[in-house]
Image (cartoon, rainbow, N blue to C red; front, side, top):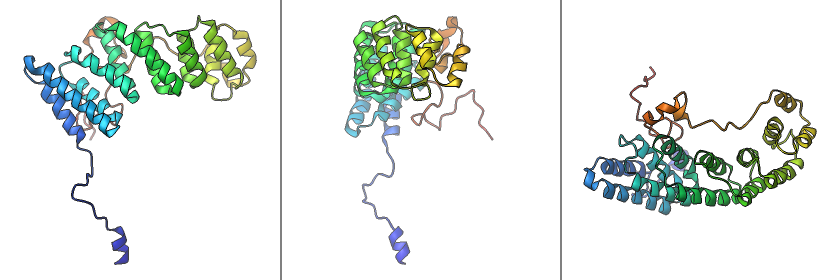
Length: 285
């Protein structure tokens, strides 16, 4: 009896065993996008404002990521862009963990419709790169640099220096590829990695630098003390692929980009709905 008593849990009548917000957010967005045309914008604004307020009150970026995913799954193909673009801007600014989803939508929209507010996005990308560069947030920095490449946004030298001095190897590799003609940035990166070695965490930077032949390439080669990295350099191996796009564009010719209906690939995270099965997918037995 004592053992059973110890296992017994008593919960309050208002205790939540699971979150109710996913179905709530999804239903509000579905109702909004399927509303009649003259009411759609109004209802969509209300639904997205609800998701945003909920994210603030719960301090949970995942709510907004879920909302973005639901919008992408909608058959309306981001039609209400005048409402959705400001929502994406607010999400990226206030909730950093949404940046990977936001950038996926940006890249898709740029390559399929090319109707972004480029001047506003340029300011946002530069500001966020500076913020996340200072914090050393590598994932956010890498996604933002990807956006900068696709949107053809130049990264200011001071922002690039911030990234190089505070972030990890992959962020540095991406920054150097985008700012390869800026010697101040290369000098700062050389100072950072010369204190490390090609057998340490900075090996991607050594490999990329030696293979590309940037400024101070000979000095970088002299610092490489790892046989595997030396062999990869001899094969001209690279870490960074400037031509790589998100997965929804895989194996699709540029002339067919306009036919791509979704910005986010299928099943990339727990923010996807496992109950939804794509029409062209077979259900495993």
